[in-house]
Image 1: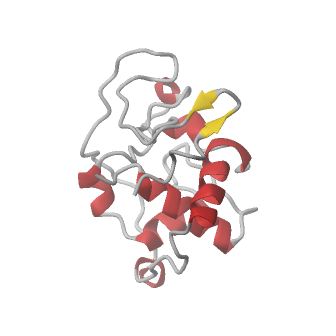
Image 2: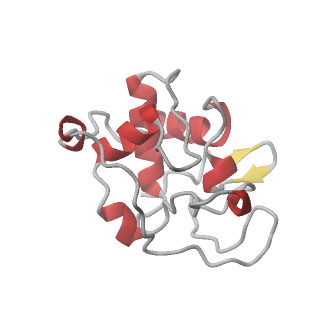
Image 3: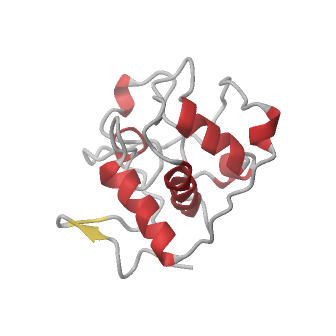
Length: 152
């Protein structure tokens, strides 16, 4: 499903669902796929969670808006990039780097509940902050949108 076609232009910048290999500065860079990670695993009760929201246009649009603009303490694209490949404008300053959401191999191994838990609580040992101000539906909308980056 190509959800972004009619709704993907914000402020003059298109956010197409492509798997770009450039940073937001236009510098060529190959994102790691798969990514090696040694970050904490969510508690078991989160790992068993499945996204309860339907992948409707409204939910995907809400997730897209949060990812690119409205999430606080900052929009996800700053670190994860507009195409979700982990090459946002801050990628050179992050160690470990941001998760590459465009990598099918990596994303297929991440349960919805792990993504939910990391968004809600942050990821110790990384630059990923906790998004405590988002309600559960907003986090699930983000998970829906994040998943689209690795769809074939």
